[in-house]
Picture 1: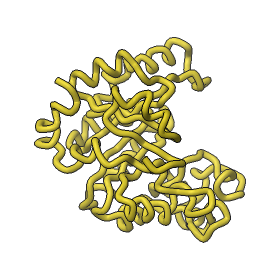
Picture 2: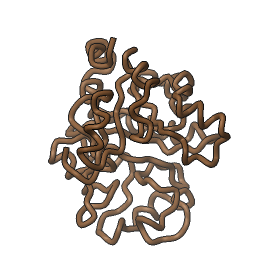
Picture 3: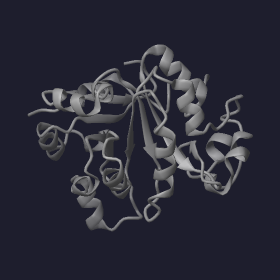
Amino acid sequence: MTARSGTAEGRERFGECWELLFTPPIAHRGLWRPDGAPENSLGAFQAACAAGYGIELDVQLSADGEAVVFHDETLARMTGVEGRLRDHSADSLAELRLAGTDEKIPTLLETLAVIGHRAMVHIELKTPYGEVGPLEQRVHEVIADHNGPLCLIGFNPYSHAWFADRFPGVLRGLDSYSYDRAPHMEAEQRRAFANLEHVSIARPHFLALGLDMLPSPKAETLREQGLPVVAWTVREPAQWDKVKAGCDNLIFEGFIP
């Protein structure tokens, strides 16, 4: 069985969300541009909806326990303000502006309200190791009332396991890459994760794999067993051409696929 041949089974379990894993392509942090709406902004999400793409975004916890949409652990690159995001409340974060624009750091609740049913949303949980639970709980509280298609993605397999044990009906994709840039991990763990051995912990419904580990014989085996593979982050057509035979969709930025 391939990922696509398993579509009927996936559709029965996850409905529209499963279908939208395969098409359309997914805009990385929204459809942002250096001279336009910045990454992970409401403007970038509006642009992705208008263009008919799916959306990938990043979520982490504010100091007061709100799920906010932002990628980096620190604020400096996108706001010019020093310090960690997790040390600020959601209200104080909303006062900051992204990349010199009028765009603010939105909450996940605000973001999903803006997107509605117009796009499939891939919510990447930025859960640090050893801190599983608070972010997952808040995200579930938010998505429980959302009427549009969505799925959860992330690198922490224990975050996936949290959802698998409590809310197995939420579609989930395990992020992975070559782990050659993971100094916080021991060499043995890096090798295990790069070989997707943590799939057994995460129990995902699909895989979101970095270009630095594609093509992957292990991923192809899992794909043949029914786990779709989404490639990230594709920044030019030639990159997609090299891997698309073993993938089911792409997360892209910097060009229009």
